[in-house]
Structure formats: structure tokens, C-alpha cells
Length: 179
Ligand code: HEC
Image (cartoon, rainbow, N blue to C red):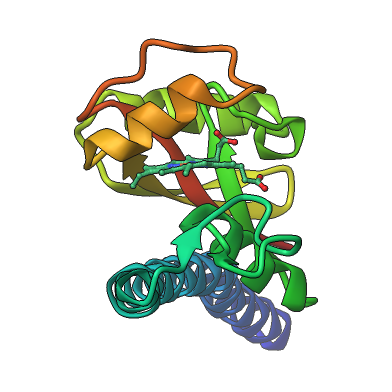
């Protein structure tokens, strides 16, 4: 009888143990998913403030966004460069941009999963998606050519591989990669 008691106690401990461990495992992913969403929301907000506040304001004084802003005393960085510059300051995780037809190789999808995620966003049903990619949590917030100038500048860029962007097109995403 004692043995039985010990056995059943052990079983109960094991079952309760599993019940605890399994949700904890899921909770870790849920926490990373939430973190990815918050980071993307913050990055989008920062870019909006940069566009509506800084770029719009300095334009009145004759300064313009210019990819070569470092060399141009009358140029400020492009919004895309602003997001990438913020990302460069971060050591804790990767924050950058990813494009379906990127101007630069550094903005290309880095894995099959990332390509799959871009294809998913391109369907237009979701604006933000998070997925696991071999131990890295990837979050993407969709980027659309909301104004003509998005399409125009990309179509005319010397590095472009696509010259028929038009207003409304899905172009890529702000991406966060969390280890
Ligand atoms: C004046 C030119 C210009 C305008 C306007 C512009 N972009 Fe870009 N965009 C660039 C350049 C240059 C890069 C690459 C920056 C880098 O990686 O250093 C870029 C990068 C990107 C990327 C990353 C993928 C890639 O193509 O390399 C996305 C996505 C993107 N832009 C979307 C947009 C959207 C959406 C808009 C409008 C809201 C927009 N861009 C407006 C020049 C522009």
C-alpha cells in the first residue's frame, strides 16, 4: 500500500509538473511575440514622428530627405534610413527593414521563413505577423506605398530591380529579429 501511495504521489507530482512546464514553455514564446509586437509598434511610431515632425518641419526651411544626407548639408536621412539607424544603435535585437524587391541586399529576406512571411503579408489580410524561425522570433509590420513618392523614388533609384511600383503596393516590412 505504501508503495502505491508513493507511486500515486509521484504520478500526481509528475502530472502537475508537466502541466506547469508546458505552459511555461508556451509563455516564453508568447512573451517574445508580445515583445516583437511592442518593438514594431514603437519603431513605426518613431518613424511617423520623424516623417510628420522632423521631415515635414525641416522641409519648410529648405532641407530635404536625401539618401546621401551625410554628405549633403541640406539633407536629412530618409525615413527608411532613420529606422535602420535606430536599429544600428540596438545591441539587444535586430531592427531593420525588409523588402520584397529590395534596393540593397541588406534589406533582403534572410531565410525561407522570412520570405514566407513577406508572401503572407503580401496577401493583405494581416498588417503584422510574428513567427518562429529556428529559435529566432521574427516580427514584421507591413509597409505599403501609401503615397506616390514611395513608388517614384524606388522606381527611379539606381539600384532598383523593379520599376513599376505604384501607390498602394505592398513593398516590405519593418522587421524585428529576437533571439
Ligand atoms: C527619396 C527616396 C525614397 C522614398 C521617397 C522612399 N524610399 Fe523606401 N527606400 C529608399 C532607399 C534609398 C532605401 C534603402 C535604404 C538603406 O537600406 O540604406 C529604401 C528602403 C525601403 C525599404 C526596404 C527594402 C528596400 O527596398 O531596400 C522599404 C520596405 C521601403 N523603403 C519602403 C518605402 C515606403 C513604404 C515609402 C513611402 C512611405 C518609401 N520607401 C519612400 C528610398 C526611398
